[in-house]
Length: 217
Length: 217
DNA sequence: GTGATCTGTAAACTAGTCTGACAATCTTAG
DNA sequence: CTAAGATTGTCAGACTAGTTTACAGATCAC
Image (cartoon, each protein chain N blue to C red):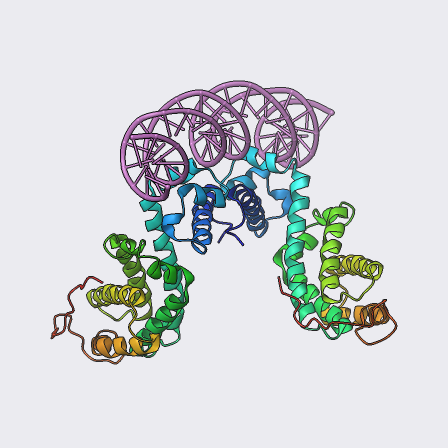
């Protein structure tokens, strides 16, 4: 795989990764508002200009950074899904619980929540990219595992789950497991109908009583 | 770890890795004499000049490539050592067997042996760098796991094992396991005396801190 | 306000890579 | 054995990515 990636592409990816890792490293000791672009660049062993060339602005960089962090979480979530391929409802509950547990333990998220919320805009008001990106990937994760599900249902589920995940991660009200099983209860019926392997006839336009509107987190 | 590696260094390493991987990829379908430098460069997505700048000549590149391949093997060998920390003799036998098995199954080594031996010089007559490099790393691997052993004994053992490994890999005469236990018999007495943890009068210190976890790299 | 710091942009400079070309060497066909 | 073709190793010039220095505007501390 790495052999088939041309150097130029890999080098660019490496640059971004190095910058992200540098940012994470800086964020482990102080808040985002205390970290300057110069700090990030220096920590990555790169000039400030290079950083600005790769990411146009400070906000753009923060956005991309948050997106990459989210990507890491989704990787873990996919593992949880794989552990419950036969039971979609359990898969969601497990994945959601794992995500919340990981999020609660992640030093970056802890800092982001406690640190005056200076980074919160990137996952909420400015979070369109994040929600879209995460939903896209979750959509793919679900679709490949339960291919019989209707595209529309998968899209709806993915986006709502992502929004709920962000909401509960930034504002936890109960232990991860408890929240997760609540969500499992809430979305269970929908999931059973949409993803169930059983040979039930799933009419896409069937009764859709509970259509949770895209509630902003 | 990757965060603490400055970009410039990582980029250089990436370039070398990309070139090595490209070479391996090429070598999986034809022999080294059939692979041109242009092929390697192209497969890595890099110009021929860049290749020549990083490695002065074709031979130098081949040398470095062989060295890196060997490094991969030693990584596996270290794993085998860790599985027998309490019994150095068994550790050597297991490691040697694992190496020979892996070597026998490795498409590159198979091709190198059968392909008219065009690459053999790099592990034999031209193989000084390889032997020294591999011995150095094996020496380190042993010394960190059995720190009570005398430096001289470790160095002697490491170099001979490396040479034997190369010899048997390039000219196998029996199944890997059989050869490995023969080597175990041959070097066993020396190992028992040099590395044995038992309270014999080895070394200046009878005080031995049993380090159970030699951090797997 | 004043000074200090940081962002975002611009310019000139440096290092690394690419392209195309070349002589020298090696291979192969005839 | 010779001629044609391919490959190695090297070079010069163009191009690109990254560095350095500098500066205007915004923000914050005092």
